[in-house]
Amino acid sequence: MMKMALGFCSLVLSLLASQAEARAFFVFGDSLVDNGNNDFLATTARADNYPYGIDFPTHMATGRFSNGLNIADIISEYIGQPAPLPYLSPFLKKHKLLIGANFASAGIGILNDTGIQFINIIRITKQLEYFEQYQRRVSAMIGEAQTRQLVNGALVLITLGGNDFVNNYYLVPFSLRSRQFALPDYVVYLVSEYRKVLRKLYDLGARRVLVTGTGPMGCVPAELAQRSRDGECAVEQRRRAASLFNPRLAQMINDLNGEVGSSVFIAANTQRMHMDFISDPQAYGFVTSKIACCGQGPYNGIGLCTPASNLCPNRDLYAFWDPFHPSEKANRIIARQILTGSPQYMHPMNLSSILTLDSMT
Image (cartoon, rainbow, N blue to C red):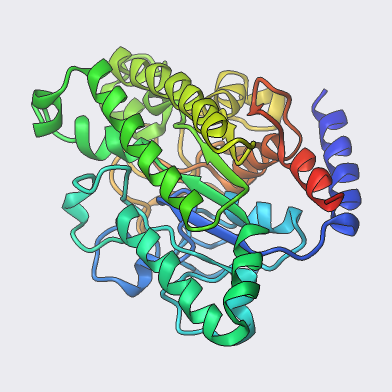
C-alpha cells in the first residue's frame, strides 16, 4: 500500500507541477514551519546549530526544526515554487517578495501568552501585522491592484495550537491558564481565538488557507521521556486535549467557510496523519516512532538537540528528528496527505484538488 501511495503521489506531483501557475505562498505559525525567522531574534527558541539541517541541501542549520525540510518546504515543492524566505531575512526583497514570505516563529501559539519563556518571538498578532507590512512593500513595487491579485491567488499555510497546550496550559503544574479554565473550556476559548486569526487572514486577502490541527501531543519523545512508563503515548490529558481541540477546530472551519460563502479554509487532520506512522512505524519504513534521532535521555526525549546529543546515523529510519519535531521523512508523509489525502485527512478538499480547481479559473 505504501509503494502504491508513493507512486500515486509522484504521478500527481508531476501533473500538478506542469499545470499549476506560479503562485505566492505565505506561511504562518510555529516551529513546525519556521524556516529561520527566530535566527534573527534574541530568543532561546532557535535551531541554528548542528546537527539541525544535517540533511538540508547545504548540510547546515537554517533555523528549521528539522534534519532537512519542513512541511512548508515540501508544499513549496508541490506548487513548483522556491520556499519563501523568512520575513526577517535581509534577502527578502525585490522579486523574491513576489514568491511570498514565511512569517512563522518557533514557540508561538494562538494566544499571545503562549511561549512567554522564549521571550522574543513573533506572536501571531505580530505575524499578521508583518503580513500587512509585506503587502505595503509589494504595493510599492507593483501597485495595489496587482498586490491584491497576488495575495488573493496565493496559497497560505497556518500551523498553530500545539504550543498553547505544551508551552502554556501544561507548561507547569497549576499554570495560570489551567487555573483559569477547565480543559474543555480552554479548548472552546482557544478555537474562538483561532477563529479571529483566520478571519483576519481572510480580511487581509487570503483565499486559500491550509489549517493544520495539533498532532498527538502525548506521543512525542519528550512526553514519553517525562511521563510514559511503558513507551505508550503518555498522559491521558494530553491525548484528550488533542481529541477535543481538533474536531472543534474542524467545525469552526466549516462554520467560517459558510460565513464567507466559499471553501477558503481547508482543515488538515494532522493528528490522524501523525498517528498513522506513530501506531505502525514499520509500515512507513521507520524502525521507531518512540525514540528521537537527536537528543539524550530516555527515548532521546530530554532537552534540546545539540552538537553533544546522541545522533542516529540514518534519519529516514526515525519518525521523530528531535524530542518534539518530525523528521524530514515524516514531514513528507504528512505533506503527501495534505496533497492527496482523502476526506478523513483533508476537508473539504486536498491540495491537489485545490490546485486543479484553481488552474481552471
